[in-house]
Structure formats: structure tokens, C-alpha cells
Length: 147
Picture 1: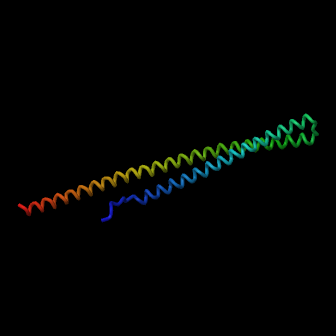
Picture 2: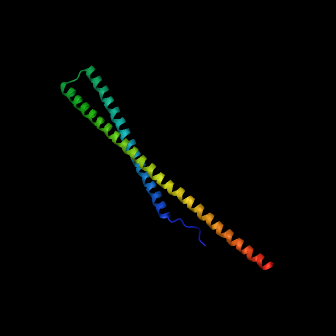
Picture 3: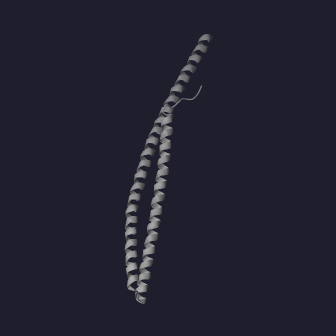
């Protein structure tokens, strides 16, 4: 005889798959956030280097056209850095949302696993009671023939 069957096994498998998908999505979101943070750090470093170069050139004397170029480039870099910061905030929100989704999926899976464990334990107990009753019946019948 096959062991007891859990009727919601397919639902449990589906929830496990959903949890795996949520884990992958969270990992991808974290990677995007990390990449954006590294790029922001790199751009800040590049802007600082530009500012140092500009300060050095000012000490040595700088032409008006170069001054204009530095100013324009510096403003553009500052705008790009601000856009990256805004993007980073959005990516942080996305990571938080993905983490929450993963947590929800894990809770749903865990609830079903706990339900399965209880149901399987109940089925085993029921099976043991049936076997005990059967064994008692066999014992009673065998004693009945001896009297």
C-alpha cells in the first residue's frame, strides 16, 4: 500500500517555485542596486578628480574657453550624479519590495508545509489506529478459537 497522500502537494510545489522566483528577482534587484551604487561612486570620484584638475589649472592660469568647458562639464557631471542618486533611491525601493515579496512567498510556503506536516501526522496516526484495531481484532479472533 502506498503512503498517505497530501492533496495539496501541487500547490506546495507551486509555492516553492514562486519562492525561488522571488529569490532570483531579489538577487537581480540587489545586483542592479550594487552596480548603480558602484557607478555613482565612480562618477563622484571622477568629478572630484576634475575639480582638483580645475583648481590646479586655475593656479597655473586658465583660458576663458577652458574655464567655460570646465564649468559646463562640471554642471553636466553634477546633474548626472543627481540622476544616479535618484535612480539609486528607486532601486533601493525595488530591493525592499522584492524582499517583502520574498518574505510573503516564504510565509505562504511555510504555512502550507506546516499544514502538510500536521495532515501527514494525522494520517499516520489514523493509519496506526486502524492497524492497532486490526491487530486487536486478529488477537481477539485467535483467542476466541482457543477457548
